[in-house]
Image (cartoon, one colour):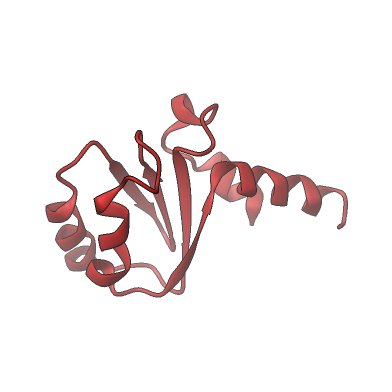
Length: 99
């Protein structure tokens, strides 16, 4: 599962800035209307892409300063959990060691 998260990253150019790239593991794949509603709210420097039940967020100013990041749960209305890219890579490494 983590291998797919890393391989599907639509923003490989920012993978070296792990605190600015975030992954939301969603309970289900959002429907087109939900993604369109979220896209309307994405008016700052952030950009996002959904791939199945995963949402990738590039927040160039960091998650703490991102107004858009706070809108994701309320707007998308698909429960999920977010992790920064560093955590995703650490979990992938742990999974590879069987830990």
